[in-house]
Length: 125
Image 1 (cartoon, rainbow, N blue to C red):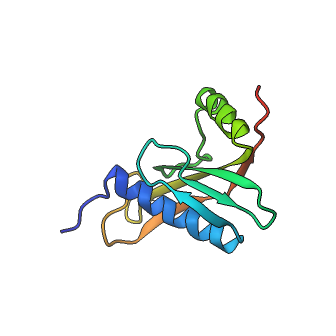
Image 2: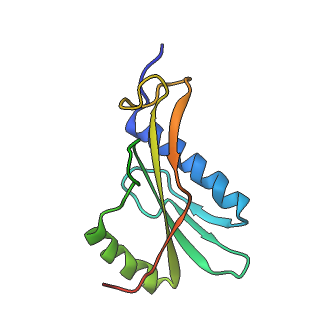
């Protein structure tokens, strides 16, 4: 049966996309959390042993970049700072190839909006 992906399935797809990008960039994974609304999704280190918290947000594909909640992010910056971690944000837009305004369907091609990893300064505003 051809059905739309659930929110959790879309989140998992977005995480797979971002995880492959992180691997390609040489990051080593310390922890992975694929549960919705639990952050960060990835805790990883680079070749210099710098810790990174990676937040993945799956959303409907749009004409504008996928963004994060700025107010919530201030709280998360405190968490990263306490853990001596830097923050990377990855907004992933997904849509049905037949109709980009609809979610992707199981076992079907999909549209992807991914502009890579965005480094966020942990200095509080």
